Image 1 (cartoon, rainbow, N blue to C red):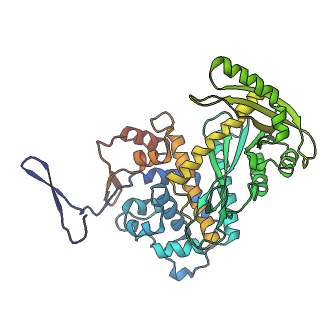
Image 2 (image 1 turned 90 degrees about the horizontal axis):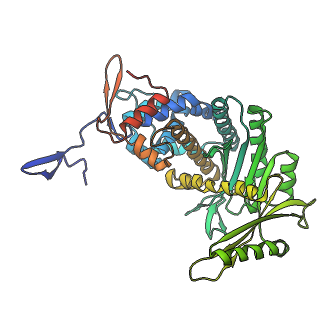
Image 3 (image 1 turned 60 degrees about the horizontal axis):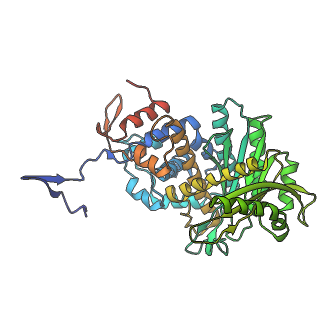
Length: 456
């Protein structure tokens, strides 16, 4: 392992010739693609808007790092794979990260240290966090309003809770029996426009680990609907959620808001009896074909707590696996859509892609790095992660037509952000020297032009 005491390392990679490795290139970085994120941030004005929500009560004579600079340092660092505040010690003099924050890459001041970032994270108030959440959603909605010129055939809102395991004395972390761990339970909201495949992150709310599915969902959805209707007047809104939301209060709320809804419904003996005929039909088809078969139907149903009967879609499924007995697997969805049962259930199944968004947040951006002792500091970290993901989704969108158009977050980072660069500074310009043999160089150049770089 190289240390400051080792001037160089020698390898025998080529016959009769020594290969020497030295860590002696001062103005170099391994994050050459961070300039793409900076260009996108300038276009969206994301960090500017978030910084405006954070009052700065520090003594102006002692301030070395503006609030916006601290936000950029953390958000760009998260996007590049530096999830911990401790990573700041490795990046304080990185020329590309200084450039992204708005400092001279060679002569500019060093970036903030880990203690400075920790004090910053722990000083944010609940009121400021509420404003940041609204501003993040407003920025995402404005971005797509501009892209779609204010017109959309339909906007679909997906809400889904996910687990955020905790491993210390974090405030409001509780044991959750469903996930069998001590955790937080963030609620994630995404938007889908028209029939596009991408689900765009629009909000994340951190919640105590023992929260019911609907905790905080009413206020979050009400705010999103208000913002969306202001940006896309007259556009139909649709809400998709799983069975944890299927209470009368939630269904009455959706109907009062006059939105389309597709809500998963848990099995119960009454519903299973109504699915009996369809399951028999599916069993006959499965016995004849030897494969898993589905039959769709519908019924009007009202649980005892419901205010009135509603349309329930039935998916009667008989599952066949080699060497096993056939298994009946009925599924139910309550909805106010008028399409055929098969079409409605297909709409509900499309929310399954939400799992890919959650995996990207967890495994690509370390959403679960909520290790602060204070709950509100962890909410702040979750919002920083959300902001980094918004930038990466915008980057993926700008990569349309390239081999990164559908890449996961980790692949985007590997191909477009983790690029060796040597910085040369002159009086008139800053030159970023990138490898001519970069494997994804052509894609990088096309994305750079898409985010505003000028060829030539």
